[in-house]
Length: 252
Image (cartoon, rainbow, N blue to C red; front, side):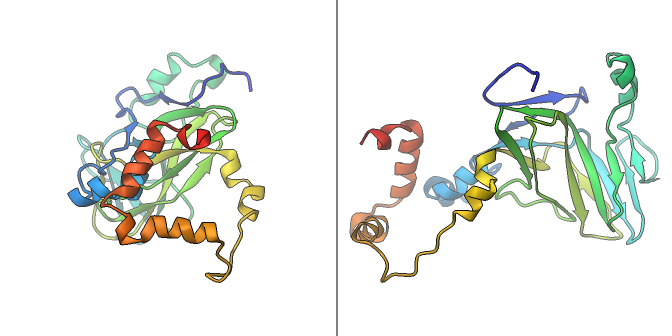
């Protein structure tokens, strides 16, 4: 792949005023209860894993059960959706694009053949480090405003330099569905390709138990669960220490 090497994820903002991606919050924007945010490392770590991505503008969708319509603030009325370009983008894109790519902006919104399904481009392109992909999914542990559900997808952006988009399934008819720029639409999470390789997924093992537990299994279970060996938040404290000193266990 002919691009400069790097070790992370790089987002390219093609729509100039689109909200910038940002690190996801451990408390899911303040929606996780205080006790959970303090003691439940599993929940907070999942919430913080990745980056929040927002719609490039506030947009409203309306599905009557057959046709999908859309509008945005400042536009008077609803437009029937087939495939729509982002308002005003083609002119700015063409001003800098090579001659053979002028006009090659991806659609902002597309009504897909499946009933009530819309593809939405976030205004971003992405590139990942070699061997890494992005899982695009609903924000973890953050309830949506209702009326739609994003499909999840894994895209190998180290091989494919292109738009960050999602397909959303509308779940409400005969009422507007508002996508706001101050609420994340997606969470982008980095995955090494080996994590979802067939060899990795086929290597799952099932141990019949508990009669098949080893002495080490029982000792680990006791250390993890017995009340007299645990303090409140013990798992969270240990997990945070491991993340701060990731080589501590290996050296032990």
